[in-house]
Image (cartoon, rainbow, N blue to C red; front, side, top):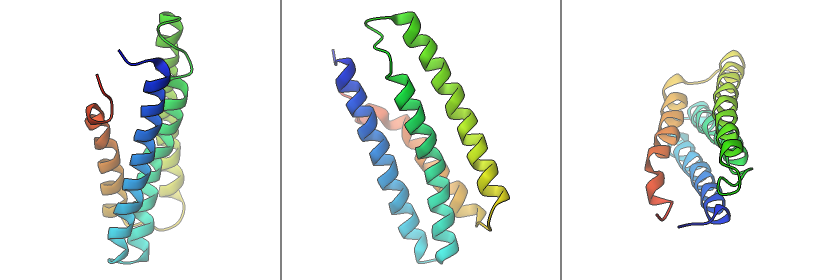
Length: 123
């Protein structure tokens, strides 16, 4: 079984992978225009930033040491991730002009990548 530190390291590697994917998607949209690329970048970054906070809080407590505290931290992490996502969406959508399709596509791809975490964690 993997240790807490190993899982934490893998989780941060996963977030770095999400960030790299965000930049790749934005680069692909750059051929459509600067606004499209910036929109894709913003969409992906919302998912990445929220996930960084989630990972940080989720691994703050080692479940093998204190299961109840780890469960509570996980609940807080999910709640905070959701609130950060909503606030970042509101900030981006109320701010400068964006192209909706690249913005939402990038966000969706980066979030959907979370369902592939089994490839990043060895169990």
